[in-house]
Length: 229
Length: 325
Ligand SMILES: Cc1cc2nc3c(=O)[nH]c(=O)nc-3n(C[C@H](O)[C@H](O)[C@H](O)COP(=O)(O)OP(=O)(O)OC[C@H]3O[C@@H](n4cnc5c(N)ncnc54)[C@H](O)[C@@H]3O)c2cc1C
Ligand code: FES
Ligand code: FES
Image (cartoon, rainbow over the protein chains, first blue to last red):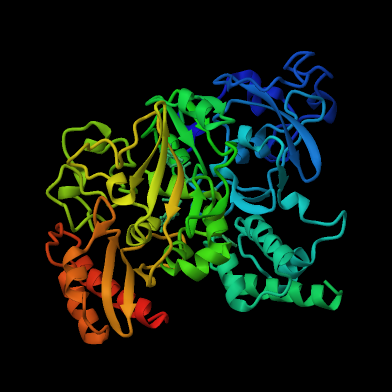
């Protein structure tokens, strides 16, 4: 069980629900918001000076602290308690309280215990479970989520291959597999079937779509070879 | 998890000054954050030690290696000397957790990881390690628990797969504390529950593992482990073996078991049985029989006795032949 569902969450000023911002999840819940009401005034809930560069104090928290996260090449302002995981920050806190709040909900939470892979992101070139890293630890690091895998509007070859090979059933594990596959192809563009299995064995698919996933990685690898990758 | 403050320690000194029984070291977080999420631990602060300069390198040292506590398991696996000269360590690390876990987990964190016992990890069960009256594992589901030292107050197995390999290489652990730095032999580092049930090693709350010192290997070595799954899993039993060979004869043997006791479990009787013998299927099998002597399995884990024999025999043959068996 997560900290949010088991014990009271962060103070309301820091919770996404309190910000009234627009998100796909709100929309799906049937909360009818117009874009106009969702956008907050420039200074946001955090007050005018909230985004001044913080002095790195020796001891921060437990109350929310201001940090910057570099996600998919963009810098985001985040105000989080030290206990907030990177996963939670990505999904619920990016630019919260500013006039450009954003959800990066592609990264999924399933086990929240470092045991399934749905929350996989690339942190300074290595795949990690974002549920098991604190957001405050990630200042100054390069974070790539599934939203950063595509090259502009062009899907990455691995994304295209997942579609063509039907690399998913329910799809909940897919973002994690895409990120792990991209990290593999970045470091080893032409992996053997054994290398593919081993590189993806930190990701679990409850629907059991593994063979199609492995096929998709092979297809992407072949296409990248044809393109001279 | 409960709220906590966060301290990003820039130096060993800063870390040691901040650490206490209420301010715990944070390395890869793969073990610690789960325990916080389960309310097993509720520190007032976490002290991030990953930024400490000098703790993330693998260096040559007196013919062996000096490994910083913050070196990740992936970095160790990618290191040519670890693979080439310390195969028992390489093989022990190879299947730990998952690629992501190995990218995150540090060697220091692996040695200091808290037990994987499901009763310890669940706040509603009785657990002496958590200050309770009894041990729920003794009458409970204990198929993954210890078969050695089971008369102590806690029947956990030590979670570190690296531990047994470090024992057969005779590694030392460098510990920094308020009074300076000291080296502990790896076997003295791990402590049995009978000595102090609340902890698994000699560290005081304000002490830090800074390095692991590996002496030069003098012989052949290997690790063999038995587990259910390819990934996301833990060994059911494992054995690391180091042999000093003269031709086909084992002049010296060091054998240590993992996943069967609250500490990496040295199999002295098996070592004695192999010493001076030509290593073959028969002598490896005889040593393996000795390795399981003294086991006192719990109600649900008698199967581990045979797994110990299998792991020891195969690790001895793998070390002697240089082949996976
Ligand atoms: C699904 C899964 C499967 C796994 N399978 C295995 C396996 O088969 N074999 C295996 O060995 N491991 C396995 N692990 C991993 C392992 O047990 C630990 O999670 C990991 O090694 C801890 O390393 P860390 O750097 O993440 O430590 P952390 O979680 O950061 O810390 C662990 C503990 O050590 C303390 N600590 C950390 N570094 C130091 C230091 N330098 N000095 C003093 N104290 C310190 C912390 O305060 C904490 O109490 C598995 C983990 C998972 C999630
Ligand atoms: S949600 Fe992070 S590994 Fe499962
Ligand atoms: S497609 Fe359903 S979990 Fe993988």
